[in-house]
Structure formats: C-alpha cells, structure tokens
Image (cartoon, rainbow, N blue to C red; front, side):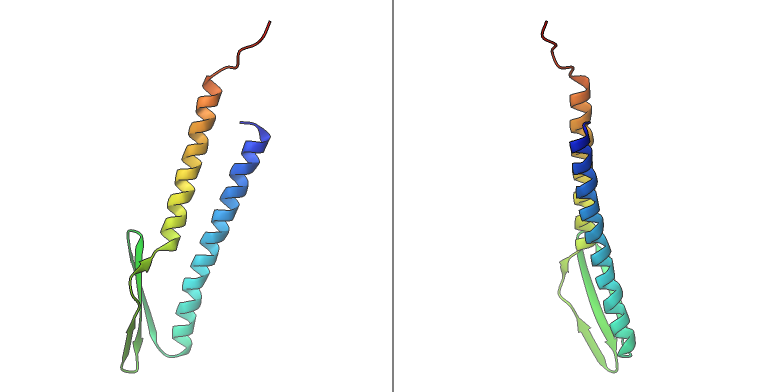
Length: 100
C-alpha cells in the first residue's frame, strides 16, 4: 500500500471517528438536558433504528423511530476498511510486469 492510499484510509477513518464523537455527544447532551429539566431520558436502540423518550412530571414524550447514526457510521467504517484491506491484498498479490 503506497503512502497516498494509507493517508486516504487514515483520513477517512478520522472523519468517521469524528462523526462517532459528535453523535455520542448528541446523546449525552440530550440526557443532560433531561436531567436539568427533571425528566428521565430513555434511549433504546435496535439494529439501525433508535427511539428516545422523555418521561416525568406527568409527561411522556416519545420520539418517532429514527436512524441510528452511530451504528450507521460504524458499519460504514467497517465496510470501507474491509474494502481498503481487500484492495491492498489484491494489489500485493499481483506483481507488476517488469519491462526488459
């Protein structure tokens, strides 16, 4: 794997890791807001969908099902890294022809 491809992989991974940080920060911020307002924040996830609920003071506010961005980013990270490794392995096996 040449240096440019390695920097491509590292750059893309850093971008996706930044996305994971921002998404998890959003969940933490929502939980802190609920605690500040005296509500309980319930967050549930299943494969690629999530739902959150604010409960307390006689209120029960449920969000609609939304896309679980944290899981989507992790799936993209795994798929892209697997493609880079596969590409690297294929190019490593095929030796370029040397002109005489």
